[in-house]
Length: 97
Image 1 (cartoon, rainbow, N blue to C red):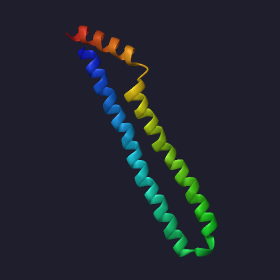
Image 2: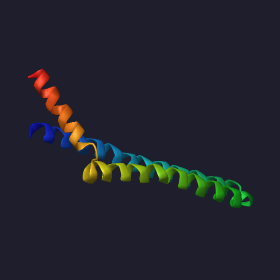
Image 3: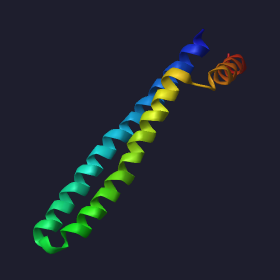
């Protein structure tokens, strides 16, 4: 049972790190939007190309957050390698103890 608990705790830490990627993505998207607005304020005639580049940049930045969400959901609810991790943790526990 200890091995299963260790694996679940490790999966929860990994899921937290994956969700943290979404937080970093939000900060990056805010930076992209702020710089685009600043650029449009400086050169209003280039609004179309700046807006297009901003939307493409936001879409690319958002994929990182989506991947983090998918990975965290897989680790928390599906965890396809759970049996292997428990077997490895049991073997490591027998080796060390």
